[in-house]
Amino acid sequence: MNWTLRTKPDPVLKQKCELVESISSWHRNLAEAMVRTAQEKGGIGIAAPQLGELVRIICIRWGEEWITLVNPTILRMSPQVFGSLEKCLSLPEGAVYRIQRPKITRVMGSDLEGDMGAIKGRDILSAALCHEIDHLSGVLIDEKGPLATF
Image (cartoon, one colour):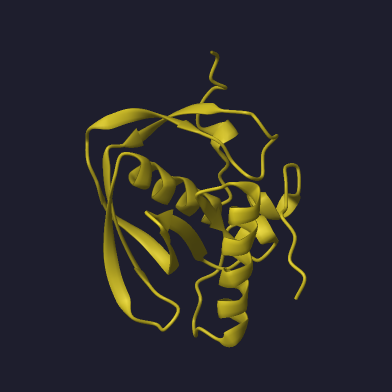
């Protein structure tokens, strides 16, 4: 398939995603396209609706590796927050938003083989997990916080 990055005001970005019932080669191909797109655009994360697919899949760079989470669910968030400066591949290039995010987030999901696991993100990884999971509910960062001024 030839997936392309969707940008605001594409209506698919405002829709809620469906659970993945059974992981197929189509889902694996989608995840590869997601990682490739994020790398090409200089992003650290991407969600399936950003390529026009309404399924609950996110990909995030973790160190030098990319992880894919299918049906990610936030288990816990710390009460402590920090001001995250965030960009989004689906919003105008160069726009940076100031968002309040939990300092620590624990997320459960499966990999592309269907194996369940949990990830504990701190600071930037916590923000990235929350940012991409927001996409699965049709929420963009321009709704969550103001443009940052420098």
